[in-house]
Length: 283
Image (tube, rainbow, N blue to C red):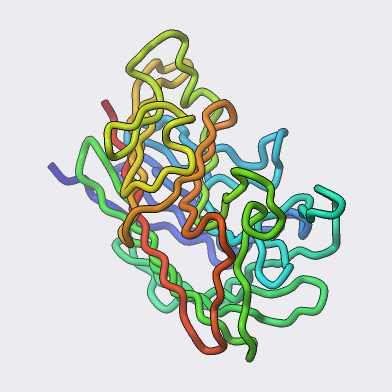
């Protein structure tokens, strides 16, 4: 069974995706968030077809977690994740080393396909490191809807770039978060003794400890919402092969970590392609 999908556009600010009469996602492509949170386009709220809010924007524990957004922890020392930067010699410190993502143009803007050009810039100098062609394809088939997020990140700065995370660059064990991140609403993984709520992954993996850092094609969150008591299953799937997932349950976070314990190089003129699929199913 399919549900109609429509798009509403507030020019220069955001795009809404609506299934029937239900807002399922708002994409804020020109945000005014603080520079030290690595300003970038983001989706919030992301909702189930039943209307339950699934994302958390600027949570008090990590205000730079901007709901559903694409990041790279560090590009040549420029922090595109947000918040304090980690270095092995002095740990986490606030530093003026942040990057920003700037919406340059829409190539396509329809309810079925959104194609955006995004420039990844160093905030301090204004220099552009990456040019991204971001393709967002929403699909609605009740009781679920999905979002395929494909990014082609081209190195346009003229020299080889090093893409890293704080595990790879600074030896901070387990801190391989990077890439597309989903910061979930606080109630999503509150298990309260219910074995049907929690984190699972390909290979019959169950629980945060088993899934975190393990390479798998997909993982899922099975959730129950406060107030409505409805349930949602969120499936995170890599369309580019198994990934070493970064996952946290207490402050719900999933990151499509495209690399883990070694930095990744991107030569001048080369393109890194990321391809992910998120599916939100009402149970």
